[in-house]
Every structure is written in C-alpha cells, then in structure tokens.
Image (cartoon, rainbow, N blue to C red; front, side, top):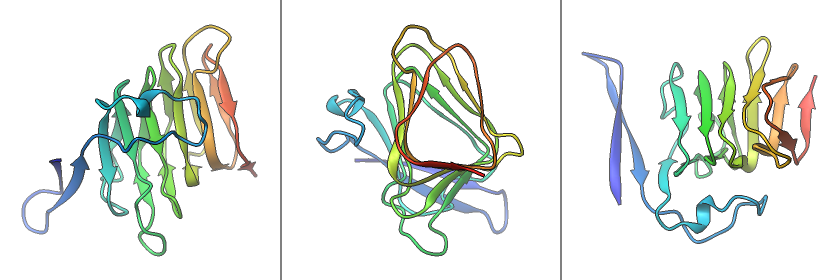
Length: 171
C-alpha cells in the first residue's frame, strides 16, 4: 500500500489528510457493468473518514481510477463535500455507505467508456441548478448513477447517455 497526503490550509492550524492507495479488492460493483474493478492495476484512492478532501476541491477521477468513499463511517462527519466531480472515460466513484458525497458544483463525464457512480449512500447534488454534463457517443450509457441521488432539480447536458439505475429524489 502507498499513502497519499493532502494538505488542508497553510501555516498554523493546517492539517494533513491521508488516503490509502492500493489495488481494489476482487469484487464487482453493484451495477455489474463496470469492468474497472476487474483490473488489478486500477488506481484506488480510498477516503477513510468524512471531510478528508477539502470542500473547495475539484476532483477528477481518470479512466484507471476509483475514488472509494464507502468506508467513511456514518453519523456526524460521515459525509464528504467537494466543489466539482469529473469522471474521465470509465472512471468509478463509490459514495459513502451510510452518508453522502455532496457535490456543490457540476458533475462531468467524458469519453465513450462507461463511468459509474455507485454505493449504498447518497450522491448529493447541492448546486442551485445541479448539472450533469455527459459526453460520448453510441447507444450505450456513458454515465451510470447506481446510487441514491438527491437534488432539488437536475439538468443533463451534452450528447452522452445517462442511466439512473436506482431511486433518486428530485424535489
């Protein structure tokens, strides 16, 4: 296992966050459609507790990547907030099992390969006008939302295909 460190703040009172980078366990995601986890060489960043990524962070997960927030414990502090999320060409994101991954800005999905957002918790789209921009072409989905998704509204842009394969609430 390798360890990646992310600094939060500067000078007095700054903290360091730790993410464990390791090969993913040999399991299939709930959707059964993403072959990313079958590759032993997948690049994994596992978030071990809520608030480990700075709230203002724009997070990009590339084709060989998996951002795994599933082990964040529930209860107070069991959520992760980021400013935007980009999944490139087959990336994978797992939301916290009993909390939420809240994105305060846009979510983008690029490329023709299927990218997946899954997990037992929630993907919270908290922008005033939440936007999912999906590029790609063909008849297959480019982004599969296989987790509970909560938003006040939802706007999908781009020529790519979006599949929502679990319950979502848009209120």
